[in-house]
Image (tube, rainbow, N blue to C red; front, top):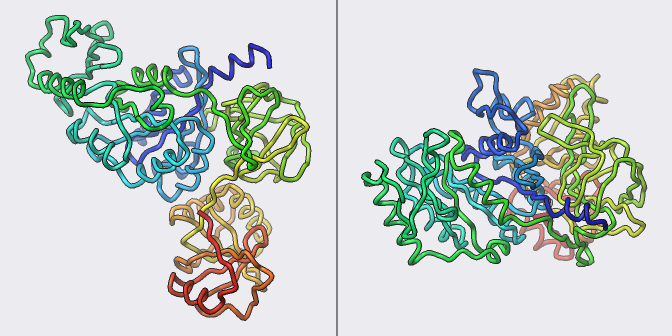
Length: 524
C-alpha cells in the first residue's frame, strides 16, 4: 500500500454518539459539524417554530417528534483528521439499529445529562461497547442547568457502569452560577459566556489561577479547587492504554446547547481516539486496515433517503484498503461480482458522489436488492466473511394488511424494502401467508405505518397480536404442524425458516417439556 493511502487511513476517526433520549446527542452532533465547517448554522433541535431541524434528522417523522430514529452518517475534517460521526437512534425501540451501528465504529462518545446521570438506554448501549472493547469518551452535558454534583456523577460512572473514569476538566459552578471549566488536561480555565479573547485564563505551577480575576472570590471557584485537589490525590491516573482498551473513560463537562466545552472536547478526543481498528473474519483471522485489498461490511440498509427516486442505500464500513468508484467488488455471501458506479457519502440527507474512500470511512452503495445487513464485500480475489452482526429476537407482533386491496403490489414492495433495513422483522403464516411483523419496540410499528403511507402511498391496518416469545428451530425437519395450538403459532421468517411464536414463557416451557427432541433457540 502506498504511503499516501496509509496516511489517509491513519487520519480517520470513526465514532458513534450514544446516550439516553434527550441527553443532547443530536445537539452535540450539530456543534461538532459546526466546528468542522460542515454546517454554517448550528440550529437547535428545539427550534421547531423557526423551521430549523437538526441537520442529522432527515426523516419526516424525526422532524415532527424531535427524535432520531435512524442512524445518520456525517463526515468532516478537523485538525488534520477526517472524522466520521454516526449519530445513532436515541429511542430505545431502535436499539437494534444502534447495536449494529456500534459494530461499525472504533470508539464511542457517551453523552450523560448532568441532572439525570446514567439512564437505562445509556447503560444498555454502554454494555455493548464494553462487550466489544470499544474505547468510550464521556461528555457530561447541560452544565448550564442545575444538575447532580460532579463528584456524584463521577461516582455513578464507576459504580453503575463499572468503568474507571478520569476527569479531563471540572465544572466551576452549575446552572445560573456556571462560571466555566477547570481544564486539567490543557492547564487552563475556560470561561463560560465571555468574549473570545478572555475565554482562556492561565494557571500557575500550583494549578491556581495565575491572574487576578473576580472568579477567585467566589465559593464556586473554592469548591472546584477543593474537588481538583481531591481528584489529584485520590482519583485515577490518566492512562492512554487503558482508554484504548475501554477500561478508563476520559470525562469532559460542558453544555452542547450553548456550545461550551464542545471544541475543547473535540480537540482532546482527537488526540486519544483510536485510528481504524482491525476486524475479525468468521474464521477468526484478523484483517488489518492497512491491507492492500479493499474489504468492508454492510451494517445498515436505508430505503427512500431520496423520496424522489425511491432509492435504497447500503451503508458500508470500509475495514481495509481503498475504495475507488468503478471498481469491481465481490459479495462474499453469493459470490456475485458488481461494478460499483454509484457510491455516495453523507451529511444526513445531503449526499455527494464519492470517488475514493479508505479504511475507517462509511460509504453508501446504491442497492437494487442484492445486499443484506451483515454482508461482506471484498475487492480482491479472496472472498471471506466478517463476523456476524447481532440480530435481535422481536418481542411485539402485529398482523398487517393493506386497507386498499388494489394497493397490494405497493404494500408488498414497501414491506420488503423496509424489512431489509432491519428495524422490523417479517413473518408469514404457513397456508394463508398473512403478514406478521415483529419488532423490539412499539415506535418501530408507528414509524413503519408512517413510512408506508408517506413513501409508498399505502395505508395499512395493523392488528396487534401482543407480545410473543419467538423461537427458531435447529432441527426443522422434525417439526410437525400438529405441534401448534392456541398457545403456539408456527410461522416462517423472511428466509423461509420455521419460527414458533409462543404465548408466553410458560407456553414455551410446556412445549419444550412435551417435545424434548425439538431444539429451540433465540436470537440475541
